[in-house]
Length: 310
Image (cartoon, rainbow, N blue to C red; front, side, top):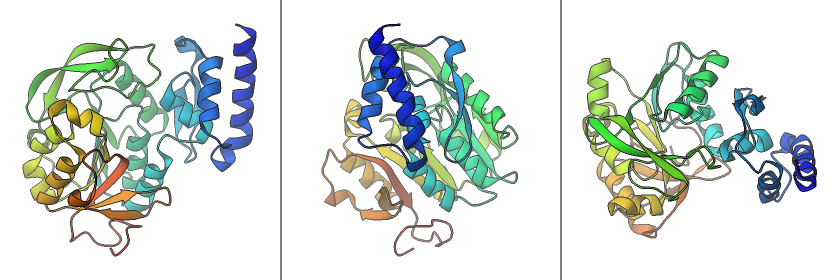
């Protein structure tokens, strides 16, 4: 290990120790700068360590990877979204986590839904799915979370899925649509399924929440979920990423307009976890947001907490 790596590693762990209780010392980009120098190569499995996020969920992680690093340094990846779900999802809820990755959202949904609820976590990438299963088991949610190896899409069958290579620090890049980082991704064949068909196959009689983080494949998921959206009227939480959407000729505005046509009202979740109302005809075509909440007008205040006027 070089002197630069050694010093950077010490500084990284020191910042984590002093900053994590308050969500990290500013500027946060300092952690990422240090981590790139402290952990310059993809780690061996033995180098992974168990860490708890701010809600007490256990993850086996390594700070070389971006999502892992956020858990180690800041107590969670996308903590604002997780905090919102913690206050909005009710016991007994049935939830879908599309693009479950390491399971941060799946674990929060399971915690809130409780033993009478159910979380269907979809993760088609084998290596990532293995870590997801490990985290679900380690946190005692194996009876609540069911893990599925399909990708939710507009057709049931198989498709090419582009996944981040082992050396890529962001393991959340997997996409049905494109290689967001050519040269840093590999391709594999995965099974796909329409949500409507999945609901029928599993005999699902209730669906309260759908979280979507599918790297621009949101229009495909929505197309395959039309009957389920109309029947169950679930609340949705999704990332809006214009670059990813452009791979199939969509814009952010077009995606939001599709949700509005399906009867949803839209809110951007900010760091205070309160929803700022947005509308498709009032945002830029390349509008970007880490978390947009889509709810039906009939949703009750206790169903979707923290949204003004609900």
